[in-house]
Image (cartoon, rainbow over all chains, first blue to last red; front, side):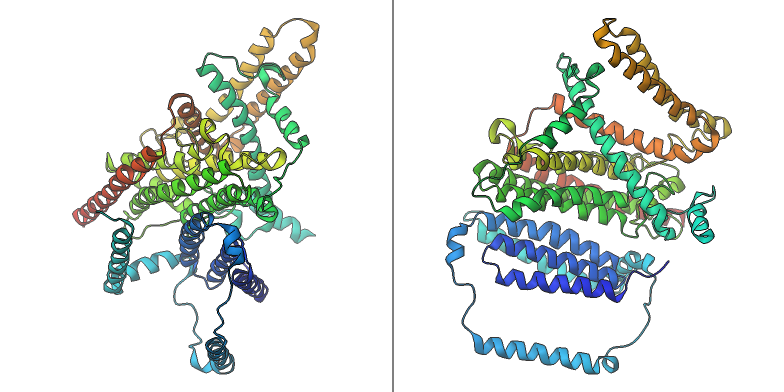
Length: 169
Length: 426
């Protein structure tokens, strides 16, 4: 079977992702921004698929596009659109912005020019069809401790949210 | 040219053991996509008619009787009416989002059928992440509902959209736990690794010799029950149809939609119902496997079960003929009577065709899958006919305080029992 991970799809997905990302910050209407963000996230899932990581792509769709974005929209819809339309969209911190953009651009140029030496040029260690199984055995075997710590962090965040939301518990 | 024919014919051989998507056969993948699309549309039309008739009979009414014999042509008349209806957009609506929302719902509802396994070879494709793909893409449909409610710029749709997003996000959690406990069961084999592929899940049930609903009784049954409740909530159907509660919100999130756009929501709702039912069938009811593949095995039983598809169609044809004989003899009904008899002949022809061994051996798995899904569709109608609508706080209580803890408990128990079983056998 011919591989689908052709440059055409990479440029298509990353182009759509860039357009989506730009729309997120330039649209005045927050709901339009959220929809553009969904497009960007779905394109990111497509890029994960191109990297032969189907499990990560599926989790990206379920968690970000299906779960978190729904909550985003839920909150945004309760906000008055007329007021947010009048609000200033960008902070005037152009000095910091130029520094951050310069740093990111420098990083991109460095990766573009020296990437071949920096990153290992290896074939995929596991077959695509074994992806999920490998992720599972790694998470619950080799990286068990880190995984448990991450879940503990999430638990702390959940308890914090409940404490902040509820006046009396 | 010869290569092209070879390419097309190669998938028709009887010893094919993969889906066209996995085999990389674009022609057959396209044919399967068309078949699934047409089949789904017919199923939605049939569901429309059946729901109205069955609900009517449950309430001791006749239901649609005017258009065609026993109202058989009513769905077609409805579809025509919806297409010809004026398409209204509210004046202050967000035009772009209002326009996109129904398409998001329809796309999400139809895309999931890419991985639905109608048989070991009868699926458009098989993915390593099949069940995750189905859950993920079907969860995208809530985005369409939410944006539809918001873009209408009206109060009832907004309330419907907010209800629906809260409801679907909360029941997805319970649903996830039920699904994980079924996926865990696929790993109880020699190699110890499970699978998320839809076809792989059914094959695991075939290998272990029992449907997952009966596995570790009653754990599989409880997980199935949780999924069966959550899937009704996920598809916004009665008794959990709060997002479109007629008595409170007129029509909920699609109040402002009319004509073609409304029919897209309708189509999406019914195909989403079929999609979640096929997840339930695949995970717990053995997918395409016929009843009792191990208990009643052997050539005789294989033959007995292989005549079921043909008999079903012959039974339907018989019903048509019976009602043809009972049609009023007035000349006004002549065309209807002839049409019904013709429909009966068509069904009988299909039924006879299904008795050919080569055909029935290839079609049988699709038949059993569709029968199981049809059972769920009947359940949906039955729920709607019998259960009163939940209040919103009751709905949240059931989701978070009953289904979620029970689902977690079932998951932990399934894991422990599975672990005990594997260590015992070693």
